[in-house]
Image (cartoon, rainbow, N blue to C red; front, side, top):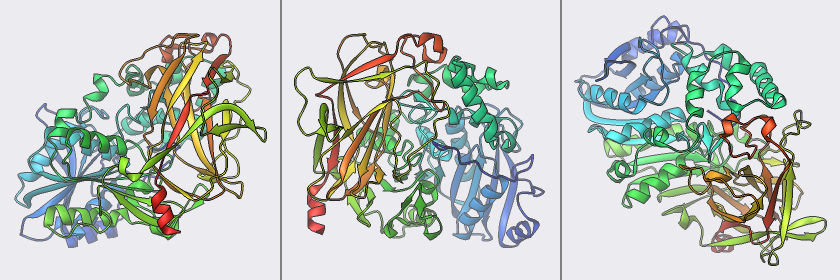
Length: 589
């Protein structure tokens, strides 16, 4: 799943792996049967009596081989057969399992809740087959990244290594990030649970979803009424909305601290800097090392979005939202997948890209860098305060805090709908950025080229007339050309920013402080003469849940709860902090 829809054109049948599936051309099916041993529509029983539908494509050999397993809810016959075939072509048994209820499983599809245990059941089944040598690797991207992490909770004995790309984290970035829910996820449960394959017709109906968002926004109805406005029940979406904080429902889906402490197998994650590229990869990475400091866990990060962070980029897709990537960023992550499993399952040399725990491409410098941790990507920080000072008509991002008690006021009428047709602006590189419902702060020009690599952070000191609000901080490099380069954004619900598991309402009129660290990695050589731009805004649009600030459950609030306009006073000791590595740029000059 992406921050913005990337609707897939899928050709699938009622049975995900059947030989008669129109998604697999007859010539390819015949070639598969000639070159490989193929088993489709295998039914694997779970301990609680459910059924997993599986596909196996493996080399024609009598010798046992290692297996590579993917476990997913995306029952796309052609794609999944292609993945299993690719593993077989590399000498592995390619195994694909589907979420219970998908494909040949007679059960009801249930996203997330059983995938970890069911993936373990499939792994144990593979390990008992005479064609497996007892070594199994698991991989997946996006939802499949989540299922891979979920499978590690119980440490199946045969699972020897994993690789994930842009993995989802329940309540970390799906369906909410820092408490804020995105509308683009609303069609996803229907897409994945309406039938045994995928409901392409509804998912690709962009007019329907745009119409739904617009009707909800203009009408000002409660967020939980989306399905009533749409006219189609969406029970899994409703279930998610009933868990607005990071509670036990979400925590139980991913590995816990003790489970991560015992996770001793090699792990490789790939993430991107933009849009849905980061997903929860940095969160999994940091938590694993938090609970197991000697983990063998590698991170590869580049200027990619959600699909690129799973499969990589090349000359055919080297431009993203106005940004033409450095040549060094064009990495084939599918090739890296097999290098990784050759290394971990067969004893081949470690992939050359993995020179340290964190491996990242510095945009604008066309080079890869390596560090032992995310914090070690930088050797210092630049702090910029949100002051009410002016320079050339702009509010200043200043290295010096504002005077005691000084503040900048942001007012937003949460009941206003005059912006419903406001066009979306802002790519990775663009001449215009989105400043709606926000304040823009701009720094002085950088006197020298500066590397910014790592996770932005900061502290916000504010008071407000409401009991809650959702906010966003968007960071950009404003280049000497006048164009903007997107750095790492951060957004959160103010009442959950400190502790995502508990909502602590604000006290109107009182000063509050929120210390934050971003989830999204960045690495950028900021040019001499560029400026840093921070847009601090309130979230109010048709694409996300709206927090009106009444203190009621946000999903139950309506436009009637908006009351007087939201007013936030950002005090002058509020700051954003950028991780910098001055020495590396200096050495390259």
